[in-house]
Length: 254
Image (cartoon, rainbow, N blue to C red):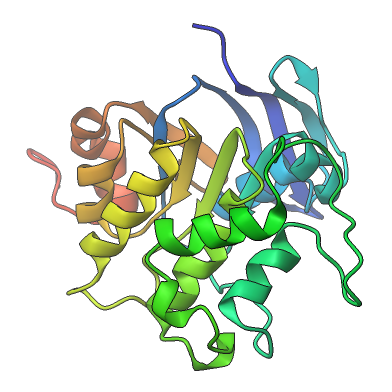
């Protein structure tokens, strides 16, 4: 199966600090990949390089066979790579429904400016209503985003990213700030909604219970490098991952 996303030798240096060091990754379509590692390990830098928020010092990013290295985030989004953020990027003074319309490119004064053909024949208003139902946000439809609980704000942020029908969706710590009692229900809802559209998912996560339960593959980062890549059970049992990422004792180690 050909890759939907590939990076080759992807490197990002900030002076003497190398935040991403020679990252070569190939991601198959319609898969769920988890990115794990401590703070500063390079996970979010990797997402930023793929989505154009940072330009690499070296290396390439290829999406569906097209070199997208260094393109602006807006152009990359239009091509089919979207993301949500650790801190939800929503407009607090707008309602949940209005936030979705903004995400779909509808501007003020009733003037539509949706760019591209991702929606096909669907009206943006219909897509916004569909996303509200798919993410169970109906009761919050007309509430300002500032009044939404943190978990609901997360859902809205992800719904805004999914509304434009991406081919790849990148999630940065989707359960951050969500209570332990709600995290599995949130991920069940999020991944159920995303996978219904056969969207490839890469998500950063610190909660190993979430990673074990929802990923098909894990990339483990440490000091800007990928130190393990593979099936969840194998990666989480890896000695370097246990030492540098999960902090678990290494059998037979010192």
